[in-house]
Image 1 (cartoon, rainbow, N blue to C red):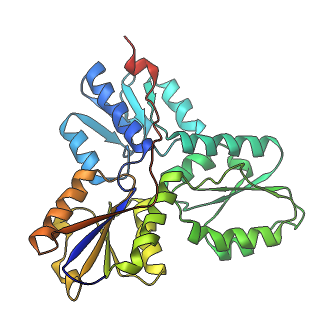
Image 2 (image 1 turned 90 degrees about the vertical axis):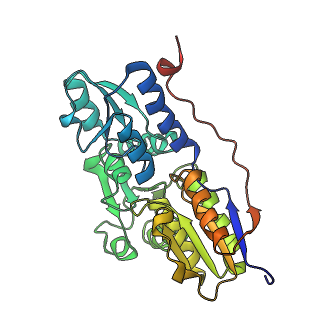
Length: 312
C-alpha cells in the first residue's frame, strides 16, 4: 500500500461468543445476587475486564477453597476439573459455570477417549488454566505435550491406543508440527470429530494472515496472559511481519511507528473493543486517520447464559 498513513482494522477481532457469555454471566449474577460475587481465577484473560468487575464488587480468587461457604462462585471461561466441582459442592457454593462451550466439548472428548481406554495426548501449555482443567477430566490417562520434542520423547509403543486433543486457544501453525510427529509415531491415533482450536481463535489468526503482508506493523490488543492474543502476534511474526502486543493504549510505544505507513490493528478474543478504539484514536492523533477494514469472516455465534440467570 502507498499514500497517506493508514490503519487496517482486521475483522473478526475482539470478544468472542464464549467471552461474551462469561462476561454476561457475571453481569447477570450481580443484578440478581448483588456484590460480592466470587470468581475462581480471572473470568477471562484481560486486565481491563477484571479491573472493571473488581470495581463493581467482584472478588477474584485462585481457589474455590477461598470462597466463603454458601457464596455465589463463578467458574471462569477456561473451565475447571471435576475435583474443583467436588470441592465447590462440599463447600455448598452456589456455582455459576462460565466455561466456554467449546472448552466443555474438549472435556467431553477427554472423558470419552479415557473411557475407551486411550491415552489422551493433550497438546497445550501445561501452566494454562484451560489445560489444567482438561487434564483433570482424565488425569490418569492424559499426557500434556507442549513441544515437538515432547511428542518425539513420548514413551509409548507405536501401536498404543492414543487420542489427540488440543488447547482451544493455540494456533494451527504451532500445533501442525506437533501433530505431524504424533501422526507419524502412532498407528492407532484418534482425534476429535472437529478441530479443537476454536472458531474465534482461528478467525482472528486468519485475519492477521490476510493483512500482515500489506502492513508495516501489526498491533494486537490483548493482555500479556492472553494465550490467543499472543498466538496472533506469533502468527504475524512467523509470516515475516513486525508485530507487537498492546495490553492497552498506555503501553503504546510511538517508537514502533518509525518508518511505518500502514498499521494493522486487531484484538484477541478476550479484549474489549473499547481498548481497540483507544489505540485507533491514539494512531489517529499521530497522523494515521485513514481507517480501512479487512474482513475474513462474519461471526454470528451466540452462547446463551444459564437459564437460571435469565428467567423469572
